[in-house]
Length: 370
Image 1 (cartoon, one colour):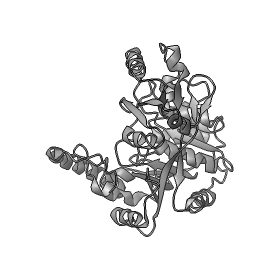
Image 2 (cartoon, rainbow, N blue to C red):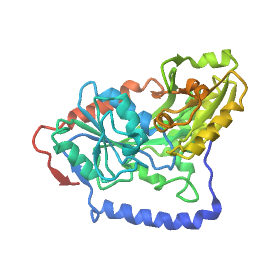
Image 3 (cartoon, helix red, strand yellow):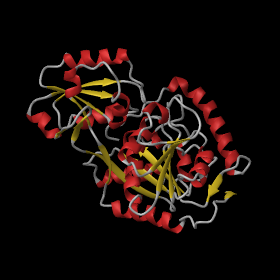
Image 4 (tube, helix red, strand yellow):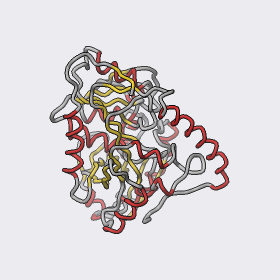
């Protein structure tokens, strides 16, 4: 597989075997009904993965928001990973990033009219969205990263698979990167292979189709990342990526995401000089990090800029201590979900058909065991 990033730590395989045993027991208890999965009389779409690290969940959720918000009142429910609060919180435009998490903050800022809530207890979060006075008109709920949260039975599961780490070639934690066995993909209604190179050929599509063992009731799609115009993080002003190559600009690529290697490869397509500076996923930047970033930036020849992600922008925006040059030359690179093989209409139809056929009928929501 081109650009394969799968790495297996063979010496940890015994621990993976024990981990797998625990996962198998848990899933069996759900399958036979000892552990209850609860469904709701409202369309619930779950966007998730079975791989540790970034597979493009936030761009996928934003794709669904753009599709559905034209017709329906949409809510996004996330656990708010690494937020510094507990319990259920309904986000507002004034909610601090630390209160709701970087990804929910990003979504709320981009889509002010969409309900965005966080709760580690997904059942409670769904029930609050459906019954609280402020949100009870919700018509469809998007669950962010809840593929393993089987206490809720979503009506439509979308499984994201990283093109560079196909799940059939990986193994369970800690030797590999899988949270569950690859066979758990059977719970998905839709499988989307993300981060595909734009030049992938027909044979490449067929290889992945065979490797994923797509079942007759499932639909498989391929997607790639599409990058937009660079926008200044502090202040106004946009910058076309092509101008960076034209001006022979040196770029400090600042990331705190699950898989920075993919973004680095993409940025190198339109910039010749790229210096990566990576932090852990969802990293909370500190004053010490400010010094590290500024030293790395000032070590680059001029002209120079910093490029970062939308998710990192949420954690950098209110950080103090950056010099004027850094603040004037830091740009955010927006990313969008692009469906390949001219199958966007097919995916959109599948999602819209599901929502229309399962639209809440207006009576008080009832819970029922699946």
